Amino acid sequence: MVAESRALRVGLATDNPYLAEQVRRVADVVGAVVVGPAAGGGGAPDVWLLDTTASRPTQGEPSERDGVPALAVRLGHGGRAPAAGVGPGTGVVDLPLDAEPLLRYLSALASPPRARVIGVLGARGGAGASMLAAALGRAAAATGPCTALADLDAFGGGIERLLGIEHEPGPRWADLRSEPAGFPAHALGHALPRWHDVRVLSGDLRGGVRAGDPGVVGVMRALRSDHDLLILDVPRAGWGRTADAVWEGVLESAGPDVLLVVAMCDVRSAAAAATIADGLPGVDVRLVVRGPSPGGLHPEEIAAAAALPLAASMPYERGGEAAAERGEAPGDRRRGVVARAAARLVGDLVPTS
Image 1 (tube, rainbow, N blue to C red):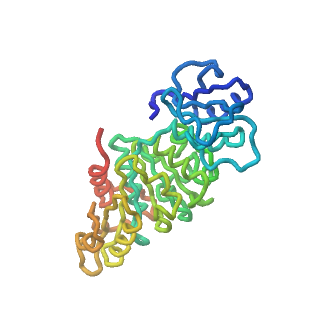
Image 2: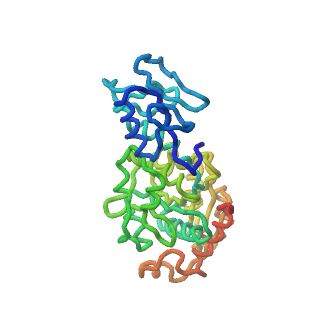
Image 3: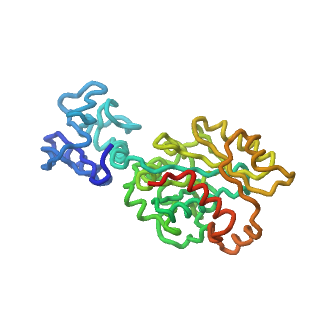
């Protein structure tokens, strides 16, 4: 893993100035520094790019040099579609044909994930998952961690309207979702709109993010690498890890990730929560139950029926829906039910340094 205190160093071994220029262009996008004889720079590289135009190595060679990963590169060999991905042992990288997959590879090296990821998903409509996700982000940011909130709903109109920041400058999903090459993590994080020290990536009237959008994985990688905590407002449609590219690269094992399922205090919600948990094997799924119960059930009974641990319960907050319609944002009521539940969850789920 590359230290966060310095730029990624890309070692380049070539005497071809045209190939060197292609490599520099890719490295500049991710903020990497090209070193080695071909670049006129020094320092131990984090990855080597070795010009193998003359030798034409067999598939999978080379994969290492001086104890660091190495990729074979060459100039101007087209006649095929760009590679889906590149890395040590995957074959020769043709430039400029494979510039985008090389960019994704170097971006991953330059921006290793560090954020703890907490997803929030409603067991059914109207459960208040977006409200809780926003309140979690606000409560966490107030305690110190660098926090981002990502709205993953393709058609929800944007969580920015719930927060009242739709006129704040900064990129939305429509500006990012079509870019397959990835984004410099630091630059993206600083460009996002802010809400109570939370960096927010939202959909807007142009739409949100959809499964399979080419920019999803790169954006998520950038958010994970530039923040301590990433809160995901997850849509009910397409929550399955294997079925939705939104989850791909997001809920992976870079730390103990958690999915909070927000359920109403009724049998239907318990059944829906159990179905969600069954579709996400290996993910730490916990239940948040909102009252009141139409049949007199208790949150503990809903958790038992869903076979999920109860992370928090939230009784009915009188006037909460009306306050939201008047423009009151999540967490504005500091003694309110949602704010207090969010504070407890942050204390339980977010490690203190």
